[in-house]
Length: 304
Image (tube, rainbow, N blue to C red; front, side, top):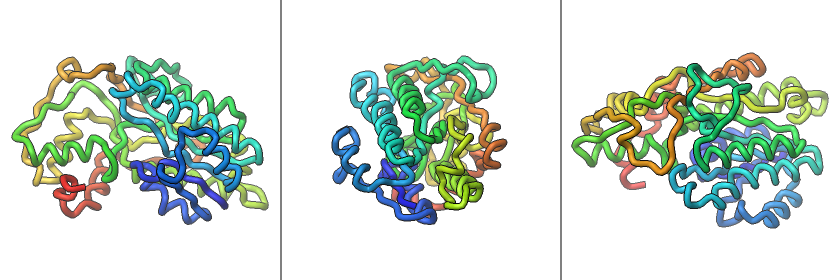
């Protein structure tokens, strides 16, 4: 299988690259080699390589900055997935794409299912929802995995920020009234591979992932299990890494300066993923332990 992975230097992309090699040959051009906002360059590259599967882990994730950089956010989050879908449709390829809890407004009382109505609060959420719609309308066999509160040891994310601030400051204030499931990029990669394994095993004679996708296309929620707040997530990080000695203080969302509102409730229901593919990610607390076990020295966060 020929596989194209975008966003290879990001949190999810860096976790996916070594695992995807078990499925076939992986091409993962960095930004310097392939500008993903250049539609002509993307089309030329994809048409030459003709991948059986595109795994689109590229995204514009700066939630606050997106309010001022709408064109950049929509270019990566909306226009790119639609373009990739259209290109793959030309020769019968497939696409795996990642979306976000920010497509919801957070007013739902329980965990959101894939059938719940979307209502993004800001540019970032609107651009990600537009990407979902564009990819689905392209007519290509596609899986869209919505995840939440993604973190890892690579790139800019909440975990790395807290590990740094926990060593640099005497105290930090963290929001305590937003609920969600912190989801390790490693868990996302492992869950993606588990789904791919199911698709390949259920495929027809050619063992094509596209064959296995028939009847299973669409949106799925893919997060670590359980739920917590940013405050309690931070406390657990510091419990696991005693080098972080800062005092953690809870604050309401209103005390955190931001140009865009965040969903108060980001909990996503993963039942559909379990029922269709038999895949369930570990609890967020277990995944955090696994992630931090890969970081022998927290000082690495300050120097990388």
